[in-house]
Length: 605
Image (tube, rainbow, N blue to C red; front, side, top):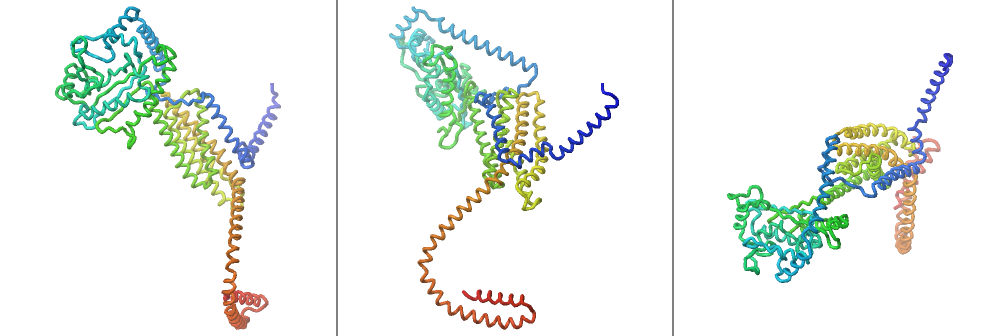
């Protein structure tokens, strides 16, 4: 227990310690220590200011497995962090797992259910005798050669398992005529033929008896012609789009009569045999060549399918959105597509890359404007490096510390925001440093100017940074997951930008003023001296060459010069006598004599 007499002593000791601490904080507080370190060792400060955030950036890259993932599932952007949303996510995941299991069981059942030795031999014999089953054939009387088709499937490649679905949508350019015109249908068929001619299509399409399945194509309906008579004597029609264009009104009436609405819009009816839109569906199939079944190394098969679809997008489908000479040469139809498995995220990623390239352009424009104010490539480089490091360092805290495993489109937009924020901070501290010479005088050193500028600019930047980070961190209370993560990312990004602008940028200014600029001036002076010596050596030959002409001109003007000097001396002697009355003393005499010499020199050409 503390005695009563010891309480005043303890209190007095605490007061003395507080006074000493306040006195030390006034002169050698953390801010003063940092400022002294910055101005005394700017090169070391610049190195530490780069190495520390670079270390965080590398740790974030290693933690992400060198793969920065961008969440392109826009449906999940509205997901809320509430218990009901959690239960829904669990139910969706369980349903997806069960669907995959059911699909695997169905594929295995279909693989072995209808096969035995006797039926296989019968199918082979039927295929050898008739050759049927190689084309999709519908008989007029409704009969179908299932035996021949099955026989063909037994010996020809068949890929029945579904892997991807590519839906093509056609929009009529002229709404008064609609999509079902001769010109539009010819362009649709040309478009589909080009698609099927792309490299890898035959290896990835859904195939039946060695032929890619085209049952979802609108071209099959309008380019159907009577085929030769079959062996049984019944007429048939081929629905593969290989014939000439049929009578369009007859085909449309047949669609209406059979109530086939898959290839028409909602306004198609008996009074309006016209549609503005149509569609075609292409299917991908498995197993791919070199695999036993769809369950054989499924990840490798998915990678091959994704590679094909990406190549199809880059080489063909993307041309529908382009203009100029790269666009598709079609005048009557507009094309678009949808593929939810692979191309949707890939196409969105292409647009994200496009926006990132625009952000690079924004960096370039803002950097050029800032560089015009800084007038130093050295300082401008480190100013831009600080902005980049602030983004990569924030990624470490986003991915590793907070365990947010992907970036969103909102986080990509932060590139544009941080460029403007960083430009404001950079120009503020640089303008304050430039103004320091007006306050401290031209004799102030770079360290003194930076000390004054730092004390003036840092508090103002701190206030704006607190307001900015506070506004973004307030989004962390949102129920929407993406909004919450964006608030954390952008707030941390603004905070790191503030720290790096106050670390890297002032250090780069001091390094430039103390080390880089003096050496550049000496180097420029050395180069300038070399140029002058070279010019003098080159001019010496010219002077020797014209020496005779120069001497002759001097001889002719010598007599005239002597006459002018004599006249000037006579005139000045008269002025001396009159001026002696007003300029007595030896100083006046010396001034008059100097004036006479000056006038004599001025009169000599």
